[in-house]
Image (cartoon, rainbow, N blue to C red; front, side, top):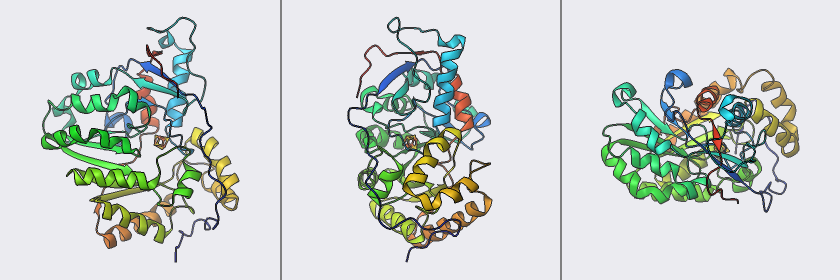
Length: 355
Ligand code: SF4
């Protein structure tokens, strides 16, 4: 029988209708000339270097921590001298405030910038992780191919430790370049998925790929000989932290070919809180008060919950026979906000697609 951690009561048995994307929803893409693309661990306070090709994410998960970074980048662009356009049509406005899911900032010069600014000696063997704040294989990548360009730009190097985190099966498009990279570098890919139940996932993540599609992508990568793992994050207290739920998820990932797993509990920044807590009140009303209390004065679920969850994850991981991913998925939050400040000014791409 599934046992939720004791912090919060269990989710209701019968879910209401899914929260789908609004049909006809338009997305606008803005090109930015990034001044830096490789975020230093000293700035992010994370034990790895990070690269994020996009600011904003069409997948639109309500809890997404990167919402704050997007708002900050947009506010900087709209308010400071960096807002002066370097191209695009006259009269076009900067993105509206808080358009995290519909106004996507594209770092169009990222692939050219990365090899110029990457100093392997300075990196010193630490991982360089692509996709710590926003998904590098979100729908925009199908058109702009910024992530693919970044991967290609790393081919001339040797001996780096590269990580890639995504929820998107689009990563399988790049199996060719990933396998070539794996001949030159240590490459570890993490497919992000925190629950197997597609209806439950849809209640929490508006437009993310379905669990079975993510597992299929994981299997495809593994079959190509790539080192791929599961990132079970964020684990939502009282909703996706059941022992049986997590064990089934870990087993499914293992069967698909995952070598390792990493997981962490939900964190809520200010913008994510504004999106997630109303959804929680609507979808899981029995948890609303507990969440309001738990997350009232901090971004995390608290040290007691985090410790209990870590013990649970570790026990299941050992049972299933997966290696420890050692927290590779932890996002930068505040740190990514700082680095994205460097990426303005904003302009529209010459050919802005609308979806
Ligand atoms: S896929 Fe990742 S980056 Fe995109 S909205 Fe969801 S959590 Fe945020």
